Length: 269
Length: 269
Image (cartoon, rainbow over all chains, first blue to last red; front, side, top):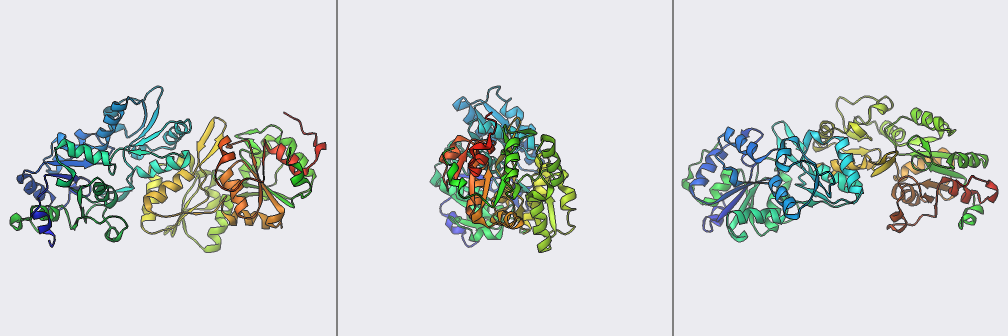
């Protein structure tokens, strides 16, 4: 890794790690990522795992990661769903939720007299009827808040349409602009940093999404590494906007660069 | 009507009329529109009815209009579905269709090896699965053609999400830009004018959609009247872009202004 020294002499005091596309694809660990996380743990750097996945509650995410062999605590996972619930509670909002049934317990029931439309990734539950109900509330003047606006994510059988499509659909037809809670919102990164007492300039983000992970973190003052796994595409290396601090082949290569440690003896395949 | 003279001395040689929101709402004629169309027919000005509705074939539209008492020939109706079929045939395209089942007979089956994704207003059939299938084809590099990109339309029970939401959704996630066939595409207006041998400067458009009917026609060099029925909203009168040649309370008021004829004796309610 040509950039190993860049991080070796300036070891971060907190690392933010995206999950899907960085550690795993679907239910399969990305090669070398299990060993790399193990080595990173030994360096005793605080870690937080940031995900815009809004189809699953935090408990399911921990269970899914454990099933693949990743040892991650629930308290280390920062989800857009959790951040949304905090946002709603702090402001006393009464949402109409358009969300996946699996996170319904985490967000609570719909308000009888809603004053905001709140979108998660309903996935297969983005029915026309659900969309039209949300649209009509927006046309009555309710504001739109979205947990994320990701374009797509990597599934085992290919790229899949993410909730950003539906956020954009409602924005277009209702003539509104959504407030985004998850990545790349600066407040989302700031909450994760606060949770591990790290300053932005001492932290580092690792992600496979140039816009939401890398450039989002950089806009919040955090250095960021783009990995060439998950939804990464070669054109990301020449896309407009700020360049990543480093582009690494995968999570293991990123960890190796961060620790600047050639004795990592990570398996090479 | 203060602007009656503006049209009275310069009677159009062809009139393009939007359907939903101008002549009717759902299955109910808009007050005075039946009588107004009757008077307009007596003036022997060629008429064409332009609709971006892509949930119904032309035969159903004629039947629906007849059921309300409107005497309109199938050959007078120009639909975005019909224009799309002509576009596809002229270019020898092999579409994957995401359309309402009711227009499947009109567009034909999906190509086994599609080279274009073609969207109509699938309405309740805009399922996540159908959208994700279209998304994946777009990510393989297929271009996107949409019959229309209307934001919403007026139904009996309120405004309803139109296909523009789903066009925009796919554009966002796949990073593509759709080609639009129906209003406000200049080619769509041009085809309607050619069909009645009228030049743009001699024609007139009547619609309830400021952007797609009025400003679309004006961009094609056609004068246009906005009616205060259907999806019209008061803010349309101060919206950006070119102003309508006239804003009329309804279709009857528009006809009265066009014919400049105070002897119309249209019913006033």
